[in-house]
Length: 262
Ligand SMILES: [Zn+2]
Image (cartoon, rainbow, N blue to C red; front, side, top):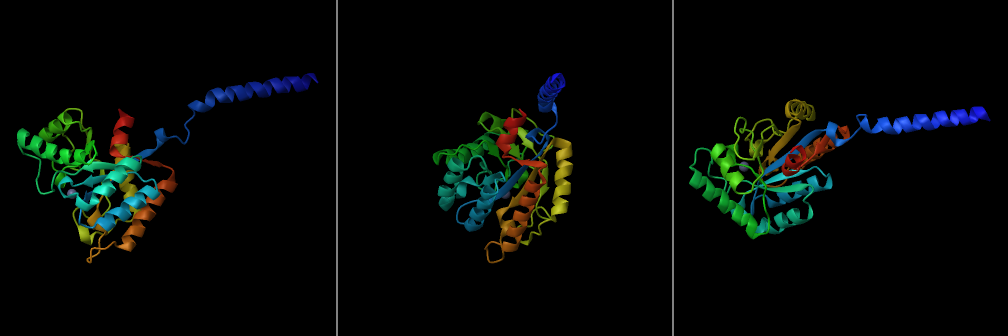
């Protein structure tokens, strides 16, 4: 009987010790995971809208967070969808401002001109009840003036693969980009990289910074007839499920990532 009490006490002591130690052991929590931000660019009205909608749906269904580079001057028939994603799918879809009309390069423009362009774009979003926090410069081209203007207009971060070395105000410059296509600006002729190659590039970016942005355009998924290339769509789904099932990564929007690290 005495022995049983003795063992009982030992067991209680061991269990108590475990409860003290366990929370400090590395576990499968988010702190140890690499962050992945998908960035889908060039969303606008009256142009490949069905492809945009299908791809966004894929991200929502798989909870693979995506930042949409939306061109404010051409919203038109995309407005109801932009509003829906902004209001009802905020945890997965972030609406980012992609310039004003996609023809103007911001880098090198005067402070006044950049103020004008960025404000015009932002006001279009505000008029439909959307407040973008992330700015994606057309052609990925910005400078410190762009960052200053963004900071003064309530933005918090920018996604650009040419942004290394720029800093101004409180804007976080996220430039750790992995291109989904074999080459940067191919659009319709995009060949999606093999999953192993994408993972290799993600690992490299995550080693350096803890984050990797997987970048693509909606037109990368269009056939010559301007409909969704179903084969490429399947490849995207495969990549998303591979990354998800690896358990090594966490998907975030750019704004969510910024708030997490600051
Ligand atoms: Zn673009």
